[in-house]
Length: 119
Image (cartoon, rainbow, N blue to C red; front, top):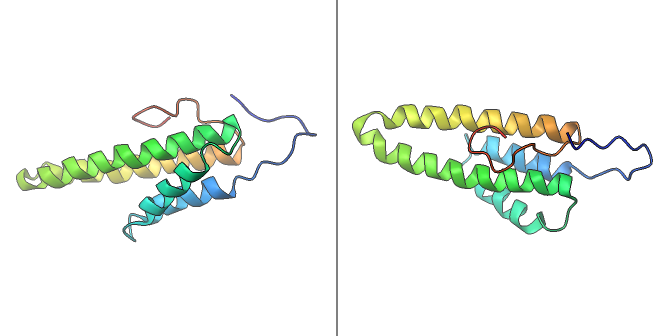
C-alpha cells in the first residue's frame, strides 16, 4: 500500500510506534502498560507523517476497543460467557499488534486503521 520506495527518502523513526505495540502486548502480563502506550500515541499522533499517523490511530483505537472488550468480558464473567470474550480479546490484541509490527517494519501504513478487527 503506502510503502516508501524512494531510496532518497529520509529514514522514518519507527521506534516509538514499535514500543507502543510492545507495551500493548506487555499489558497482558503487566497491567497499565497499555495506558502508557495510548498516552504516548496521543502525544505523538500529530507530529508524524501520514504513514505513522495511521499507526498511531490504529493503536489508539486498539486501546479503546480493547478496553470495551475487557469491560464487557469482565461483566459477563458472572454468567461464564465473559471468559470467552476475554479469550477473544487476548487473541484479538495479539493479532492486531503483530499486524501492526509487520506493517511498521515494512514502512507501510495500516490499510484500515479504523477497523474493529485487524486493520
